Length: 93
Image (cartoon, rainbow, N blue to C red; front, top):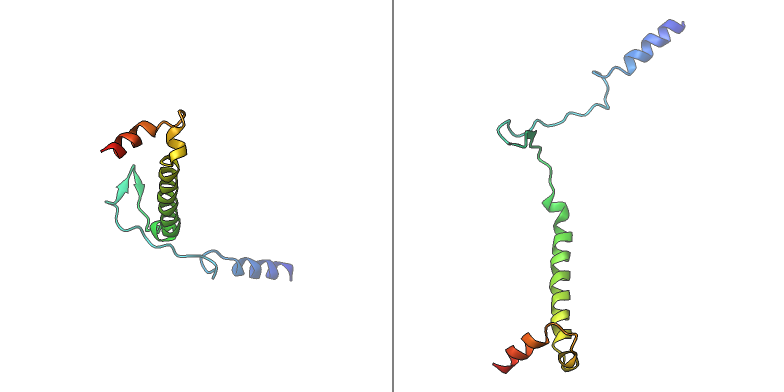
């Protein structure tokens, strides 16, 4: 009786007949190799697009805020401002 259960249990968990095995797609072709590695169709731009867009908006926003802050009259009088000379030179033109 125990031997029959062991045989039935091993047949249930057979890897070839298991419903839990996954079938992976084959790579596009063997000619698409970089550094000797196969190329798999992994999406990376679509999931990262919102973060790339937000990074660009943040970059330009901080740049605009910094340019506005260093161009104020108070900042132009400050001797520690490294941009004061170039901004006054542009305003003179």
